[in-house]
Length: 275
Ligand code: C2E
Ligand code: MG
Ligand code: MG
Ligand code: MG
Image 1 (cartoon, rainbow, N blue to C red):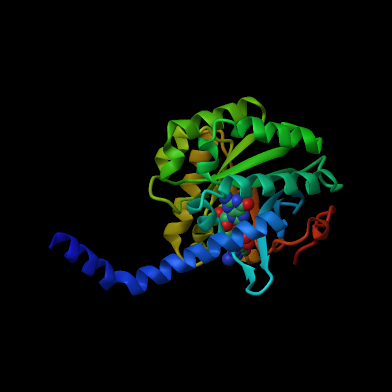
Image 2 (cartoon, helix red, strand yellow):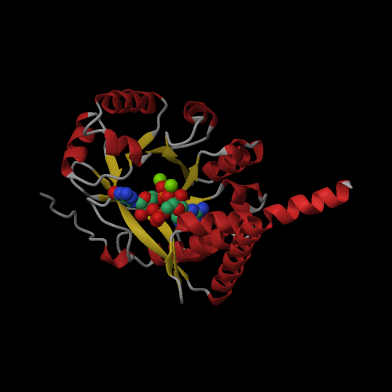
């Protein structure tokens, strides 16, 4: 009877489960194909000094142009890759591509390359040596690379912390990405071996209309300074946000105001004059 009941219960949920399962299987197969065909590419967005708009670094962002479905956003395919066990392959592919393109870019001697990594990539004990090998192949120094890690449950694992330590000992810098978007933010600040903290764009978005956001950011900047962390404000879209951030003591930022993600060659080497 229990078996029959279980079967019925399954049948009852089947339409939605099947749908979700089909979708997952579809994305997984498509992504596997894309990795095999090498149809993923990388877009770059400038990270600038807010005072003179000099390019301090570039963030590599994975892009997937599907032959039929068009562009698939990374917010969709990165989680699929994580669930399908494909994130290590995808991450390494992005890193290789990004390093090769960056090394060939005339701006690379004075700017850094920032690459997103999933915490699960760092559960692979050979991750730090793979990164080192990739840098070596591209002819880049460890000091030219920043790895961005988002606060998340996995990032708290001691294996992940250990990998971050090894990477930093090697000279690679670590950035906490989307700081403040997660739930355990302050704990991460002192538990995480990091050099840079990227403040989530929701704080920047609220800065113009929410006095509380201004106070939070002002206090955060003091805290980052005390902890020796360099801060980068994400998602700056208009000059008034930039002006307020500068007043708060923020020195680096990223956002559509300074450039959208695109080909590395589209990023100007000379600081752009902004209104
Ligand atoms: P992220 O690392 O926080 O990257 C910044 C995201 O904000 C990018 O979205 C970028 O296009 C967007 N953005 C930049 N400036 C602005 C702005 O002024 N306004 C607004 N509204 N958005 C802005 P994108 O490229 O869609 O990437 C989304 C997320 O996907 C990334 O967030 C990152 O977490 C993840 N991702 C992208 N590429 C990779 C990758 O190679 N590996 C991993 N593990 N994750 C990746
Ligand atoms: Mg990022
Ligand atoms: Mg971010
Ligand atoms: Mg993000």
